[in-house]
Length: 164
Image (cartoon, rainbow, N blue to C red):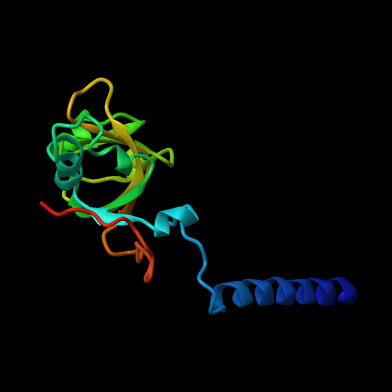
């Protein structure tokens, strides 16, 4: 009888020790809100949906004017998610400023977004929309709380991009 009580006590101490070691370590523990960010996304170019659309569609009369930006990674900083954007969104994508159709990299993104929330949106420019003239499509979009991740990374060499 005494042996089983001692064994139970030792087992409890081991479990408690393991729990304390995990929860008190200096290493950051992942939380449900943490998102995977592909390494290539840290070498992105900061712009706005308006500036990127102008680079494609207004920079010259040449139809290929903005195609150099296709397949490049861009980040839109401090975007405010609107109620209208959420209403028109689907499980697959959300329109930013009615200019960029952003397809989500991670399922369930739409359910985590709230009207009025400020986010940084990073994704791959897939080029002009085939359905909607003068609009763009982005693939692999990640919506991060504004300023929560230093993106682009310091010293990254994103594109030199015109500002309008």
